[in-house]
Length: 277
Ligand SMILES: Nc1ncnc2c1ncn2[C@@H]1O[C@H](COP(=O)(O)OP(=O)(O)OP(=O)(O)O)[C@@H](O)[C@H]1O
Ligand SMILES: [Mg+2]
Figure 1 (spheres, helix red, strand yellow):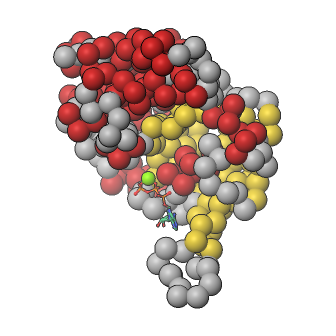
Figure 2: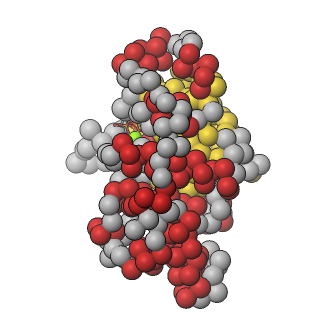
């Protein structure tokens, strides 16, 4: 479904602003190879600054590539322009950690969720789009009455549900979730992750889950990819990587973040309707 080969991304060096001319580029991703199968959940792990978020955006062609190729659903999207990418954008979505800033503060939740239905021609008029938006809210465990609220009137967990709702609105084949539960209470984290797991099972979408929390990755992901300094140092089935890490960096990472004894029923124990109101 997604095939990335030798991906290189260089961005202007933020720490080197110049009065004249452009800042020099620094290479952030240095030859990434990655495959994601349809319906698969892949965890992306690595220390801060290793390039996870850059990779997340590059996968969806939100950053220019300096080398390499990306195939998505059988199509080479490496060099497509924004106009050509547009129909594919519905199929590849990203959810960010900071849902507060991802949502327009002046739009109600309902209007924000209705927008993709209108702009992608999935609803004949705004009334129908609002109706679809209300259905979407219920689908992610929120009450349809949330549609009338503004982003700041929601809790962090509710906003992440809205972010997820927006991401799944157009039936994506791939959702990238970048640290979407960081900063939430542990019980709310479990609810949001349980929602993701349920949606994945229902829709068959593939999920790339970026998280610094290894117990989350272990609980949710079939496969895990470890990044360091812009390259992948280790990848494999979660059980294999967690039980017998091969690369010294993976071992260090596993030591640095002591894994709590994860009760596999941890996420299941959450009542998803708890936050509906
Ligand atoms: N727009 C940008 N311009 C220049 N450098 C950037 C830009 N975005 C990220 N970087 C740099 O690229 C490197 C990778 O950043 P990235 O945000 O991808 O890391 P990350 O693995 O997501 O880290 P974190 O776990 O803290 O979210 C960092 O050194 C960062 O400073
Ligand atoms: Mg990041």
